[in-house]
Image 1 (cartoon, rainbow, N blue to C red):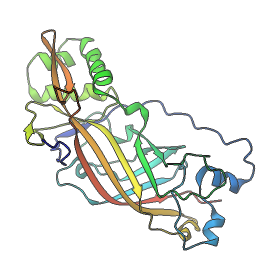
Image 2 (image 1 turned 90 degrees about the vertical axis):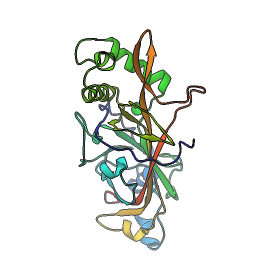
Image 3 (image 1 turned 180 degrees about the vertical axis):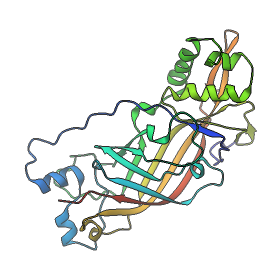
Image 4 (image 1 turned 120 degrees about the vertical axis):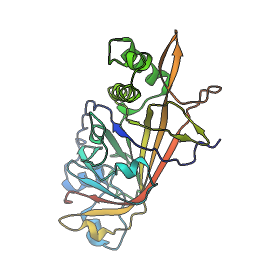
Length: 300
């Protein structure tokens, strides 16, 4: 069974993880006194370079600045996929290298939205690595910040067990899993509990994994989201304006893993779908392709 085959996730709704503390921005190096050199050192962008070589292709900046945005326009999205339901839209830079997805539309499930997730923008050369050089970076990546990364055994299962063992009263996670009752109410409670751990989760009806159905799964969690930026098609001339932009193509890879149940001590706990022989996670991939536009602050 090839579990890497792209499969859509039929959606009933969505709940997303609660946001965490925002990391502090690093300060400028002490020896950066020249404004333009500081701009190049930190960003890899140069107004003088753009003016002297207007037909040249810019590199991706080493970092973004607060207030800058990236807007994604899909070209190829699977029918029925999560990204068709909740498009990427526009990401906003909130500080240093961190971004958040902007306001979205679609079937958002209680209680939070996509903008509770924090993302990290990066290139293969980090800020200040190549001091004074104009960026020649041909790609950049946007990924989850560290607080949304997790593993099945050491993170997901212990977190869910702690929540479940905290209470067994009506409408609690333990009651939802082991107390019977309405399946829809059970699934909503499960998705709500997962969201409190900073993990994206969505309700499902019946999801196909390769050639096998996971019967009774209440939903799936989004393990990772990776947005790759590449193929810049704008020129340096587009940087020499009051509204500088960089445009090109993107591919987003979302990795999903279905929620299952683990029997322990005569009761069920939450688990994620995996190979019981090897312990390997069984992941469903969704991929979207399209074009992006980075709207930059005016260069000095």
